[in-house]
Image 1: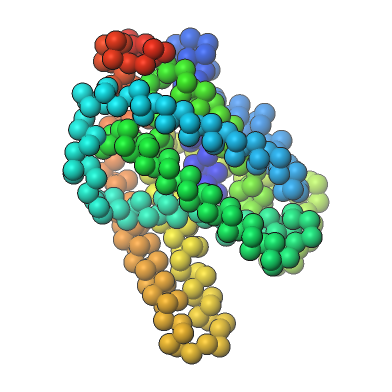
Image 2: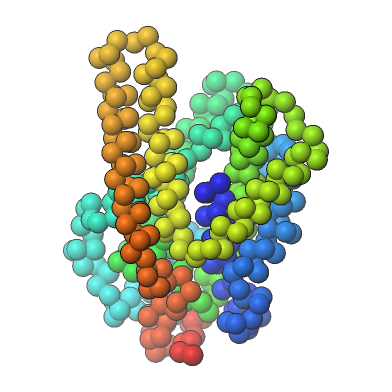
Length: 342
């Protein structure tokens, strides 16, 4: 459910800026408010998609989403070239301290990266959706998908961090100017990708809630009424939590250290240790993985709690126009215009 909350925060952050730019909305307009945008996206897009009962119907949407990811990557590469001189006047992007290894926040970063690869909870639904599924086909699909995801994650991270350095925010697109039309196209695509991915997470949550309420794990199909009630309840709960914060970085950190790290490192290794008949020497790597995951999760939770307790209004700048956007427009790309200060 934390994942769906993060997705709503992303939509609220990105879609509002596109609407403000596209329709020249004042910032206090109801159509430019996060709670309204998230509500409309939930009612007209994610809710109908979440009512689907077969994940296979989203296969074509996944292909479209992948193409949109590639388009977004091309836009941030273009902006790296055009913003390099501008950013050098705002911050020392190439400063050696910026590129130091294992700086403060490394533990939370492990959680966020783990969240990026957290797909364990979807595997049963995805496996069942493959026609003629077998272990060989599943191995191929898994390795190709994870490899492509890894390459894209590294590419986005390097280009984004090389562009903005220490100013890089949890949502990379938040670093760019609100009236940058090229990036606004990417924001729109990113919002669509998020909305198309949302139903996958909702399907898993529905199954867990249904099994918990029934008190069993047998795959009994839900009735239409039960399915609708559980789906709407999940969407409503997700909506109210997501509008309570606009700091994506903290949401991703919580999701990473609380859910992703245990799910990726601790539980698989612990299950192997429990059910395997291998000798204790053969289980040493699994014990190390459990230890690593436990340390990262415990320390990450402590750091996130401290971050939440010391949170201030300036800690999350998702709705603030970045300093480099106020530089004289002769230094900016041709389609970026200096924004007013008021």
